[in-house]
Length: 122
Length: 122
DNA sequence: TTTACTCTGCAACTTAGTCGCATTTAATAC
DNA sequence: GTATTAAATGCGACTAAGTTGCAGAGTAAA
Ligand SMILES: [Mn+2]
Ligand SMILES: [Mn+2]
Ligand SMILES: [Zn+2]
Ligand SMILES: [Zn+2]
Image 1: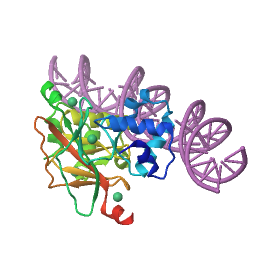
Image 2: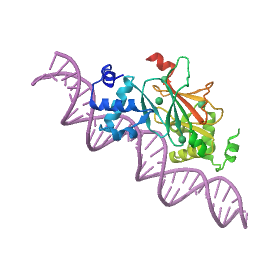
Image 3: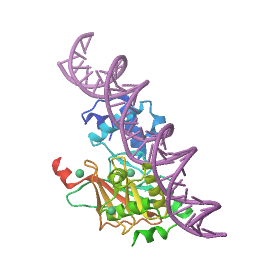
Image 4: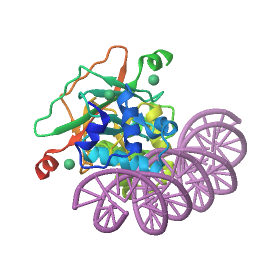
């Protein structure tokens, strides 16, 4: 999946800002928030969030609210769950978990709790 | 489980504000946010959140961040998951879902997606 | 290269939740 | 009961992630 094609397939314009943003998200091995991305992009905060919204509308990415009041973003590739540590706020991908709810449409599963190192430390 | 005993078992003072707050949370059949509670309590917003933090420290309640950027609170009784609709922001309890992660400690499972009525409407 | 429309940067704004501080209240001791 | 002390409260000011309005820049198609 090439980034440029990903954008052209959708109803949005191909800009350098968008390509850069999608490249960063594609290279990431976990969901990222604005704070983690801002130093690697030149676009303004408002533009960042407007582009994120566009990507959500176009069904390119998934987002969820973490425990630290920040929103985390990840490209919609293979569906999987996420773990968020309520102590150190680390975000991890969790494959191999499957949940089904009849008549519901599931976008994301977030598991809140303590990660192994925070469990051990407490 | 009587509210007064619940407080006395813990290392916090028994105040009318706390009793009222716990009664509301106990009577609720789903997690509630400050906005949904504020009209039924007389305590200040700061006091509300400070009490919620105390309850969390004392392991009386669970909290999670919803899609609407509000934090939802529920007494820690029988463990179960929660569904949050990304469209109408409705919060529901979901029993009968069980997830285990070795070496992790799970507090809460939040399923994000569209509820049946929002699925139908779209 | 013109035109129409989208995207962008900037600055001002919104809002759930937090913090500092002076006052009140609950719990314990006398 | 009254005194003592530490915790709880109300108020107003503050924080910070994210949003919005607007004017100018860039993209796509003709
Ligand atoms: Mn992931
Ligand atoms: Mn519940
Ligand atoms: Zn952790
Ligand atoms: Zn819904």
